[in-house]
Length: 293
Ligand code: PGA
Image (cartoon, rainbow, N blue to C red):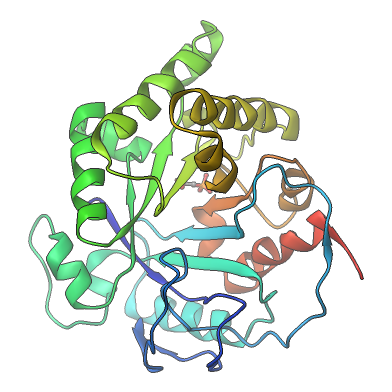
């Protein structure tokens, strides 16, 4: 598995509730139970309950989802601060928040050489993995079929998949953006038994870590194409339910405009997820999809 994640936020319908409870990345609050495979944990940040709001700009029906992709960053000191900042941040309650720390900071003790198994991730309570990230595709050399296989296996073990897709700059310039994304989607579709526990992350490679964010229109154009692809190749129900999130230089300043796009159901955030208050701003960009009741 390329990255691991720990869900920090639970379903809005959760009956039991606990305040931010992170020490390192180990949950202190028991994961009581849930039938909702999208929201496996009851961990929450300190946001007070808000009145329900009318959703304005959402084509899909899934809850807003924001992932923090910490990649290979951080030290014990910086991660301790980040966790403390996240736990004290005020965040909207109706957002699924997931963070993906480097393996050795999972707070399990000991370091790992090389890869890690789904069984090990499950064993320490991880609920999600990030697969198909461009750094795995283009630096490590994972191909569509291999990524699909990993996705199928993770899902078969009950671990949710943040399934990344996205084109290189030269592919965009050659007018191949949709073709590349469709091929990547097909590889997942061929390998997974169901889409129930998958979030699709559209991450144009030219926008990742470059500071060059896709414009809201560029992102929306691909997101709507992805949703159409799901509708035509999987089912209308899956197209409506599946969260399609955007990643690539998302920050506190550009998230609100992106979030307003109908088919953007959240974000996968790299650099800005390493700053607790800025990450909270991105989580809270869900409000730009709504109006107060
Ligand atoms: P970035 O990374 O936000 O730093 O561009 C996004 C990602 O790699 O998921």
